[in-house]
Image (cartoon, rainbow, N blue to C red; front, top):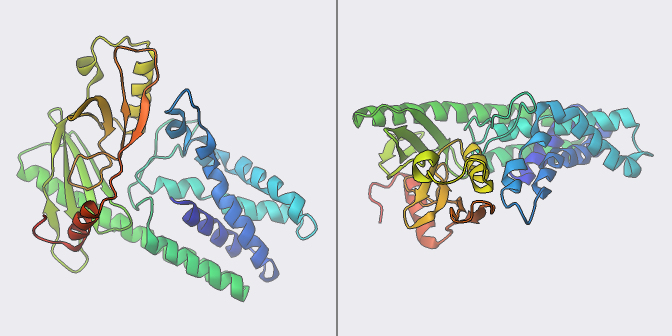
Length: 336
C-alpha cells in the first residue's frame, strides 16, 4: 500500500508492544521501520526499465527478510536513539513495525514476493485497494490517540478495527466473485482463469477479468452495501501468446526475457494494445474497471530483439474519466 499507510501500520504495531513511557518513541521507530521495506523502489537501472517493477515488493517484503529488515531499521536509528533506549527495545519496536509490511501489500492486487526465496510467486489476495482512505484513517486515529495519551490500548483497538475492515474487504471480494461467476455463466462461458480486484480507494466497485477461449474479458461489478448489485459489461481482447504473436522472436533474446518478466509481473494477463501493436499492456489494471485502457505496458521492437523493452505509463486523470468512475461507484444506470 502507500507509504503513509505502511508507516501508520508500523507505528500502531510498535505502540501495541510498548510500555506507557515508551509509546512516543515506539511510534517513530515503528513508522520508520514500516516504510523501510519500500526502499526497494530505489532499485532502478537506466539500461533496464523493467528492473524497478521486478524488484519492487520483492525480497524486502518477504516474511523471511523481516528479522534482517528490522535489524537494518534499528541500526539506522541507533545513533540517534542510543541514549534514550536500549538496543533490544529499539530492535523490538523495529521488528513490530517491519513485520507486517509485506503482509499488508499481499492483501492488495499488485503482487508481493511474500515467500521469497522459497517461492517466486507474486502473492496477491485482492482484498483491499493499494490506496484505501478508510483503512488509513482507522490507523491514523489509533496512532494519534495512542501517541497523545501514552495508551497502547488505543493502538491495539486500532489494529483490531483494521483487521475487521480487512475482513469486510474479504467478504466483499466473495460477493464480487460470485457476481462475476453468475455473469460468466449467463454468457455461456467457462472461465479458464478469473481475477476480481477492488478499484482504487473503495470496496464497492470491483474489476473482473477472466479468460475464455483465448480472450480476456473485463467487467465492472458494483457490490453495494445497501442496494442491489450492478454489473457493467465491459470489453474483451485477445490474450497475448508469445509463440503465436511473436513467433520469430529468438527465445534467448533480451526482449523475450523482458516479455517473460513483464508477464510474471502481470500474472500472465497480457494483451497487445489495438491502437499500438508494439505495446503489451497489463490487463489487470485500467483507468475504468470495464475498459481496456491500460495504466501501464511495455513498448517492444521485435526488429531489435537484443534491446530492452521500454516501460510506459498511460494513466488518465481527466475530468471525464473521474466523472465516469464516480458514476460507476454510485451505481448510475447510464454512463455518458
